[in-house]
Picture 1 (tube, rainbow, N blue to C red):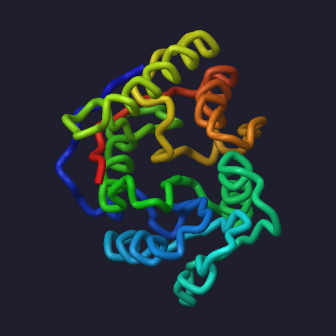
Picture 2: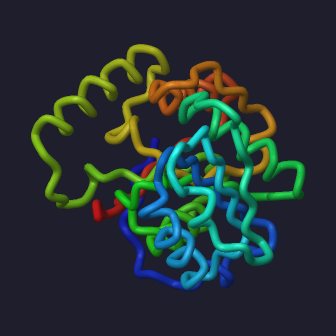
Length: 214
């Protein structure tokens, strides 16, 4: 697996047709944050945004802007982040996406850095899954979270044979070719490891690039 240096931010439209990139945002009770995430994505050139409302009981639905290119998919009950991610990916594929990004709705990641993930993927041939790693960059991350992530990394390595520095990252970009083969078996947060596992099983190439923690 490659660790790719953090590139300088550029407009992703220089590299791919933005009409063919869809961003999946799983959301559970994120009414106070989801508008900000969507607005930042739009401001950085991403206009196809799929919010998967995973049974929220707050005002998440009302906070999603009603503008073209913003889609809300609703789970009647909470199914978990894995199921939400898969729902969004399937919808993106049905819309003709060639690239699919995922980002958490809790504003933990900087939506503007999605440009960097796209650029990093474009700079390397045959990368099918680009993971934004919070641990390849100097970030102020609590030791408890570092420990939890390390355990996840070790489990991921034992399952997949591939060591990644941020196995729990929800900040990713994948190709259509990989997404079409992907079927997430876990609905909880272990789905992040499952994605890496499926990439390895199907011989898709995985890489990481540094991202910030907001």
